[in-house]
Image: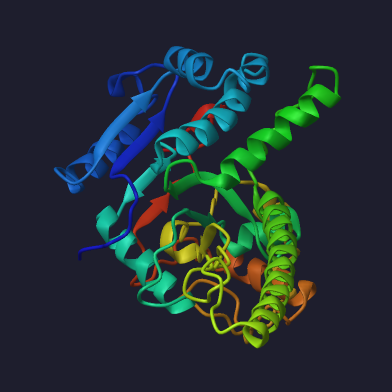
Length: 340
């Protein structure tokens, strides 16, 4: 499957040291090796360690270095992945992904979704692809219908969303007197995406109104001149006046959970703590097992939670589809939770 998208064909990983042999488990090393083998000669793979990241940020992003050097461990990693994805583009992914299909299959899927949303000829300059966490996680862990996490990015270089989130965290860091109580880069980024979209919607709305006003004034001038002279000044000529086109906002495409996250994290105790006894459940709750998402977002929180708990009670933790490309295995390597 060929794609005409403009993502750099590179994959970025991060770990404490820059050798694959230093990964905490053999299984993790095998998953990384299988991804490399599956995408051989199509993608370049890079593993960045803590020392590289510190030098990288100091060299290329001095404006963000005061915050970066303040962080450590998983908090530093959360900021580093944003900077790496912003700078290089391509794919950033956590180490605990299992590659089920080639990355070009994901490119093809993304291209199809963009064509469905826009048009066949539309080629946005800035594209960011993110993924929804399993809906069972969203309902039982966060009491929300949608949660997006930053364990995977596919992006064009310098996507403006990354700069938005970096600038936002730096501003908060300075407002707090150059201190932060906890990691400023949350693992969940759906709120940031919503805020960024709202900001762009407002900016585009103002831009559209300005363009409409400019066109009305220009039309009035052209009509006035055409009634007083046979010759229209070339600057005001419709053929020579520069027409400004409304620039569509940078694209952020949210993948459904079955593409990258068809596996529920069965090691998380919250799955079981937040579900009551299975005896209260009806066996007739209808859910879409093919796409691994709930049938309707309008069925209500209580019903959605019951459906989530039924899935847990039935131990239906792996729910792939025909479009599944990657599987996040939830080993939480940076936190030391290794269950592989």
